[in-house]
Length: 401
Image 1 (cartoon, rainbow, N blue to C red):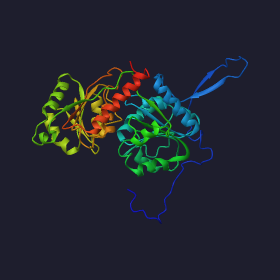
Image 2: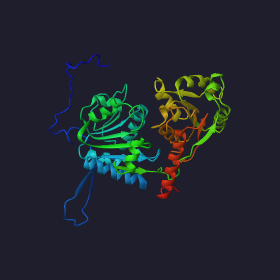
Image 3: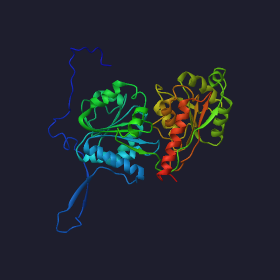
Image 4: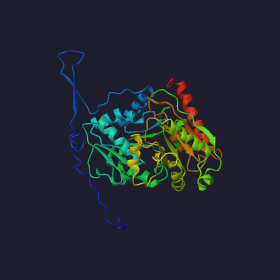
């Protein structure tokens, strides 16, 4: 996009505003003023407190611990990992820490590897921080030049920034492509000030980080339960034969077809994950014989955003997808199937995240997650153990009923 760039080419950075007086004044944010009289004496002056946060929800005990850790990281400008199961309410955990940062005049960025997550997070933060500008940055965004105290961005868009943020939140830190791309990891470092708070969020930290947490080498907080206090749904393993050959012959594996028909009859929405786009292209016409409104979605799909919105509005009964929807999107009442769960693309982290799409809503806290396979893999077994371990830990800590 930049064309040819050589070592003798001049590159420019722009701070947007003078550095002196940048904090607090530069954003010109209207703040809601809350007053209260001192309890010590009516003669003492009125104490003023400002608030940006407009949210009347309550945090679970696990969320409260994580929220305090995030606030402490903002105060001390340190790093913290919040390791929370899918559906634990990681977004709500950030609210108070972000407000503290805003009250200090700091500039905050919430970075995530995927556009879908930006599109889901931006409206939520605009709702709870109605008095401030919130920039949503992704490919093709209209907010490209919006100067805002709170930025929700894909990690790719951080290439645009140079030591701009006082607080950096990296959501889904283990997700592709961020976890594999050193350039994106560099972009996070480049866009963050030298002395800044960094908050990492994930349900599935990599093995290195898990060991660092286990041996006390990484500052972290763990939330092993969802806010609605129900256990995580456990994956069911079902052998379906050579599924790839069956699709090649124009057939859906019988037990996969039965699973789909059951959801269609009961009017229960579902996601079906497939290993690659080529397989999905062959599978879509076969699934549409079961219901003409079934759709498919993948990373480069030009109608990806619209299809996800139609799924949310319950206009699509079943959506075939690649791992692009393994995380960051919420549908309140769905079942999930993984066809070809033994494929290399379905790592332990991917399978845990995919399982986490089920039972997220307090109104629908249960659901079915099925791994259809042609042979069990270590990743499948580790994902099952990971989920069972979190349920046991949550039960031990009395975080689930």
